Each structure stands twice: as C-alpha cells, then as structure tokens.
Length: 162
Ligand code: NI
Figure 1 (cartoon, rainbow, N blue to C red):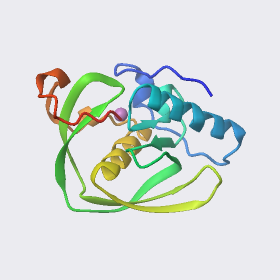
Figure 2: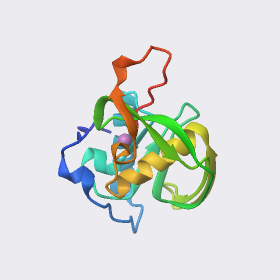
Figure 3: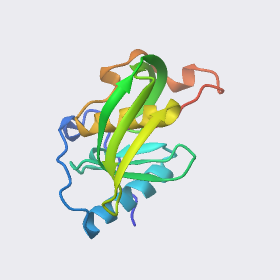
C-alpha cells in the first residue's frame, strides 16, 4: 500500500469523466488499498480515484462506521432535498453549502465483485453523492453556495473532507 498525492482543484484531471471498471483484478484492489490509505492519512471521510490521478470509477468511504470500497457506484434512486456543509480534500481549507437528496439508493460492486445495494441518509449519503460526482468530473464547488474558509467558522462546525 502507498499513500498517493491528492490532486488539487485546478488540475484538469479532476474535471474528466472516469471510466467504468470491467474487472476487479489485483491492480484495482491495489488502487482501492492505496486510496484508503491516502484517505486516512489525510483525515478524510471519502476519496474518489480521480483525486489520486486515476480515471476509474472507484470510491472509498469511511464515515466512522468502517471502510467501504465501491466499484462502479451509481445513484439509482433519490428522494427529497436538503442543504448541508461540504468540504473536499482537493479543495483545501474551504467549505460550502450544498443541496443534495435526503436519501439515496446506490448500486455498486465491492472489491470481490459482489453486488451492493445501499440505502443511505445523513453523512453517508453526503459522502456517496460527493464521491460519485468526482467520477463525473464534478466538484462540490460547482453546486455550493456560501463558499468560505474553514477557519472562518467556530471549531464545533463539522468539517468532513471528501
Ligand atoms: Ni471531494
């Protein structure tokens, strides 16, 4: 496993669409492991492959309930709408308010090729939406209002980085 460099906004690779994974082989498993290590080293709750320079549809998330590795994640249903604060490891020191669904259903595969069917709300939902956006070259800053520096808010403000 290795910690990889996280691409920062302005890097055009972050704006490209990632390709689906056709076979979860050892190389894909290695990438998922590197992404996990990179996410933990950066104190993030989620990371998408383009953030480490790899244009494949791979996401890792750990909102504190354990590590989830997703291959080809796709939002298949969503309901409602709510605003919450987001930040991103690729947009250092900033935060903003983003409107997302209240609840999403995501289909994906795990690293063993098993089909996953996930229903999520709250922080998990937010991380799923944010990371899947990365796979399509979308940054939360494209959707955010009230962009501001993280240090402009009191310390109790949540600052999960994705
Ligand atoms: Ni992000």
